Image (cartoon, rainbow, N blue to C red; front, top):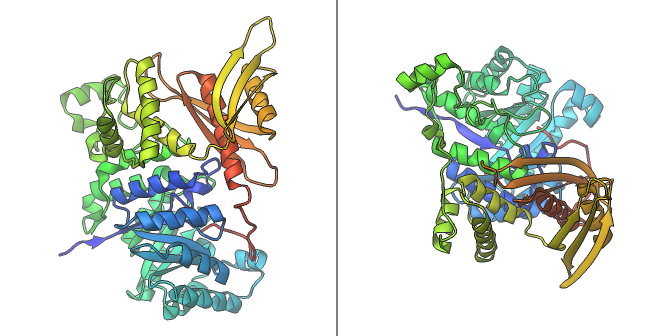
Length: 519
């Protein structure tokens, strides 16, 4: 008996980016899409083309780069959204438009202020219009988990007739229990009788996203929507790595199903996205958390020494994890070796980016005795995060005496001119940020500040992530900074956030029509 393939629909670049603090620039999104392709994801939801010119640009460039995965753009059931989606994915080898409208009574009454007949008419129009751009159209019944079954069937009939090939049933607010989701999926799967693929998109508000997704497979779903590291709005989405490994390991339950995922790319994917977004999985996160393969209990350690299978159901190498933090390269390593290592870690840089990253690597190698894979990942992601250098840090000097006033002297390059100024603050970091504000002419408000060690040892790199608001009417910007010196990393992160703000200023546009961009 042949096995059925469960399609993996990754929405890290769309729903995952809606995680607070997870904004990514175009180059970072391209790198993630390329890694998702290596991972074997069937469909990459590359973004929401109508959300901003930045999203449209990223989706377009991903469409040009990715060849082995379907590239998808989300669109509300609005003509302008669908046209933007169709135009953005036009150059993709395999294309999909994913359109949606709310179907629950509470959403139709309070958000859409539309009757059920009006919602069906809007949905049919959206699918028909999307079919004028692509053959592969997915339709989502937003808030299906709280929708009436009779209406789900009615609208599903209508959109399948209009040309939808996948019907997605999202638990938008993460409210349903596994048996409830299973019953809904089973009834809809039996009702559609193979006319369309049944998909699910489960949020994790009650911690049941993965459980609901697995129950859906048992009951007829053949596509699972998920994200790397479980990123997403609020409590996030069902985690791709947990779903895939559960399907693989529990062959006694899921033996009739397979995925196209190359599990050895799970850990590299997780680390790439954690480095780019600055959002680390919790230490005890299943599959990819830093403690997922740690054994502290004496009883566990004894068992592990005798036979690893006593307490370890997954081998680290199955997900691409080398337990020994691999020592790589050194000060005498050449550009070719550096490029090869980047490629193995999932990065593809153009010549200019490679040259800049290699220069940073050589500088680091002169100062740091041992360089690890995570150091290389951090260098590469730092390079991508700061591709737009409207303002560039040239030098930083600080004075932080216990009996004096903390101050900083900073030189920044802007429009091929170097500008130097100094300032004081309530602390060293405050002095640095205020001086940057004085030089740039932009006043930022620090919303969040995080610093972590990239690898291990006294000479470990400091990776600083800041979230800064420069305009109260626009989203806060994320900046990343990397250095052996935490204050220097902080300055780079703050300037990175400023550059992101300036590059996005004027690109963001207001969205019209009914509100809501969530599934």
